Image (cartoon, rainbow, N blue to C red; front, side, top):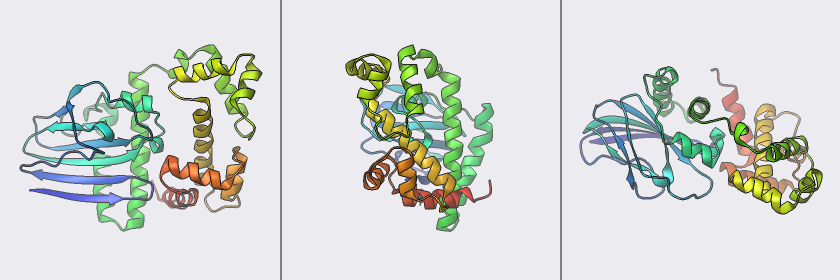
Length: 292
């Protein structure tokens, strides 16, 4: 028998808990059929935690791989290419479905952390694995508003876990960037609030061609425009969470970070985060008041 408990929030986060007590086992949530070249292997009954990453854009399927898991391990996976489970007949699966942007991850980051589970026996795994499992159960039993707050706390923990994984297993991306790109990114940060910031102006300020500028960002796996938009949205999201329903309006926040049109800002914000700026401000504001 398989039973499912689920929680959905306006943040675009879902928490699902499956109790597997026989065949057929429920597969991991996916945006398509499970990817046959990707397998998660376990030989011991117990509780396993999965984080399904919902990416904003499509990328080629990752290389095939098989990962061995133990009870309590935390495994990130891409919902577009969900792995096949090779598990015991009885086990418990807790799944957090989270947009990558909400965790502050790029596509490249997501590709790296899906290839190495966080072992329950590791320093951070031993701390967060039981805490995440408890949060999932509490969110399922709580009132909707409290469930949203608990889900937001889970997102914060998963973001911390992702940062730790990336720092432990990958080189600092800034150390591998070209000096030219580093200078450009510093320039973008300094001028992010200026609506007229553009590839042409950036290239002119650094005395090289627009074509060369685009090549620098192509090597980074993005474009100039996408980088600027993402950084502006990041700052707007932080401002909205920080100020809540305070004196600064949504239009004022958008204008502060270089958006000329409040309508355009609302449209790109919703496309990036799955909710309007107002919904984000109100939901994040409630979660921020929840005791941690």
